[in-house]
Amino acid sequence: MPLGPHGPRWRTVAAERSVLAVAHTVTALNRLADIVPVFDSDQRVQIIYTCPQASAVTNGVEEHLAAMGALVMPWEQATVTEFDLALSVHNSGNLHDITAPLVILSHGIGYTKYSPGNRKPETGNRKPETGNRSVYGLSRDGLVRNGAVVPRAVVLSHDEQYARLADAVPEALDAAIVAGDPCFDRMAVSEPRRREYRSALGADDDMTVVVVSSTWGPDSLLGRNPNLIAQLLAELPSDRHVVAAVLHPNAWFAHGPAQIRLWLGDCLRAGLRLVPPAEGWQQAVLAADVVVGDFGAVTGYAACAGRATLLASFPEDQIAERSAMGELGRTARRLDPVSAFLPQFDAALADAGQLSKVRELATSLPGSSAAVLRKAFYDLMALTEPPRAPLVPPYAADALLPERIPVAAWWAAVQWHGDHEAEVTRWPADVDARDEQPPNTTDRHLVVEQAHPRRDLHGNAAIVMLKDLGEAGETFTRRPTCGFVVTGEEVVHRDKGVVAHGLSDVDESVACASAIYAWLSAGRTWEALPGRATLRIGSRQIEVALSPPGLPPPPASEVRPPHPSRRPPA
Image 1: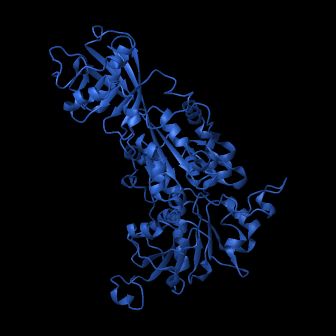
Image 2: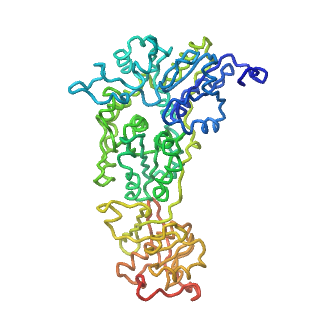
Image 3: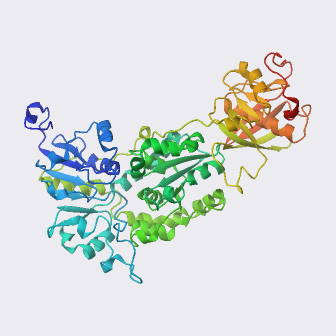
């Protein structure tokens, strides 16, 4: 509805009820997006958003509200305006100033974390039911003002939270509603779209999708091991793996999106799919085969979705023991940052079913959250519910828009199986693997695109990718270690000229050039090189013709001999 004293004059639809959605942070907007579909197609209800500016990280809220096209009311005006319902997924700020029945919901996977400043347990007395450890969202400080319970409804996702609320704020039990988890339910109905989500990440059916999830703060995955994303990218063969990162909005907006992108610059050049902060993380989790995470809600939802889950950071003293996240910490494997990653992934995939208890503790009403929430909301508004069932929309595949940059530098290794078949493995060269892990432990060579911004990689490239084959001669002259140049169709050796053509893309050309390079580096001769060969790169199988007869080498003006002291394999 248009706002202000003259607002009614400009209304087109005369809504009967107004709902105030309180968005403290971008995280809150993400959770509210799972809740507001219960009002779908009801022209009797108008939703108005406001930001109380009561959280440490409020950056990004205004921009995302504008992108949504939401009707926004300043907090100062919202506190002097009467509404029929107010929804908040945070407890902070002067929510008691709102004139409306207030509903408090969780902004994560239930209520799982001890309140800041109250996380260190007394010796031998770790259980929250003793009353000396409050859980954020279910504490007296968050629910009671001047001796009275502020919210008209406290929404719980699981019965175990009811018992915790009874211990902490017994007078709030009359307001408690066990209503399940709307995000859990939407992810469940979205599971059939998994292939679409994988496609949005650029992964086919044969690739392993690894999602790295980090909450915010010094104890998060990113806070404790900021190099882990780069190490994963460096050590996982890029033609068989896709790595995506989901970072908590507070990490994005406390440091600034520009800074996050700058810090992850090498990772983005190495093929990282960086999921934006406002939406898309649920789709990324559902696309995943393996999730490497921490004590953030995204990791918990990954376990609920049955994904193999490894914990890279998990401060047990901050997590409520009987919660879903407490169960995750008790049962999930820890990522060993020293050992090889692939065997750890295999082990996690083998025992992913052991995390079923996490799923059981996430919601007491799987599949029913929207129905329970809608009934509660409409009862508080004294409005009859619509006759149709509430909406539980799957997450849209086209809303998963990861930031990514095409990889332009690889380490490549080739294993010939006999004389007619070779397997090519590539790792991104913009990130550094640990010394004792591949590709550092294998015989490899460097492939670099001509326009790559890192000049140090250019100086050691055995193969250079070009846009225009006419630049081959100059490239060989300027790069004495370069033995081959490739385009999307041809492979050219500096002495032999065109040695393969008619290829379908740069990946095929690089695989072909790498195979020939490895053949020659092993001391085998041009004359022994097979006329045709089968190359495998990831799940692709490529049939190529090598040194096709009748093709003359490029003119001498285009391909010049190398410097005699730096000649590549002959």
